[in-house]
Length: 406
Image 1 (cartoon, rainbow, N blue to C red):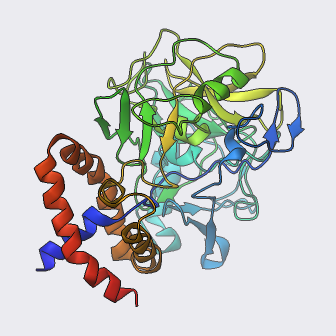
Image 2 (tube, rainbow, N blue to C red):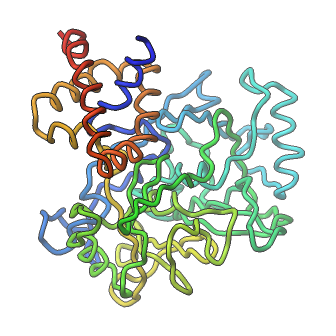
């Protein structure tokens, strides 16, 4: 009976909020090709950029142990905080990439800093997701209420550049860019240690067989092929907002963090999973404006995985649209069975928000459901008997759900 109940829960959670590891960018202002503007409505020029979409996982932090550490409430990672006291934590200390690990990280672990000895260098994804894209250069482009002693410069990640092993990836907190540097360089080799978990590269994909690809880690559904042309930034936004693909019409241009989430830093030329189709010299627009230079927007160069900002109106780049994700499941078995606005679906939404979301165990069930929901939906679409069997399971559990929310 217990196994049946768990199986049923995994099948019925509707329109899920994914408690994943992908934070929002922090950008809340809208821009045209030259300046900040009032955010427009659907169908108007420049609608569909980063700030038009409500953040699902806004940056959220908690200071620990008097501020010597900071917990990221979205990713669960715990970060070392820097100081200005000439200690091992001093913000001005720089290292080569190897010494950052052999000296700095080793010292933190030998001293059991914060009561822990599992400190490490962050991956490039983990470090990059700290960037707050609402902050203009010269930065630091990070929440300085929680990370007050941050230098507006490059910080080492643990990620080696796949093409040149003598180089490693860094995040430049001057403007939030991602690029590579020679591992032996220490002039800009700042370091911030991390522990707990490992976000790493989110590259678990399902080919949906209809021109779309689902990332089961983030819940995002992606356009499998590159859009047919190169576009200016405004054209890229418009293309995604009007795209119909795979039976869906709610596509959008991905923001900075979403686009970086599909970079595979273990590859180069291109730095992306082969499940996607890419073009030569693949530079792709994000929906995120360069806050300090509003006539520029951020783009990812999928040859290697770095990203910079480029002029919106004069530089044509490529596009890969995205939909769904952390604001709601892109494929929902419950809605396939009962419909989006049915009483059953509304009941299950209430159960999700008021029961499951309130416990660690419940949130883990949500994650597990999200990983398997594309497979479940595909089975229902290909086999009528499977859909009926799943509906019977869900129907048998609905009374228990209704009783639990009374």
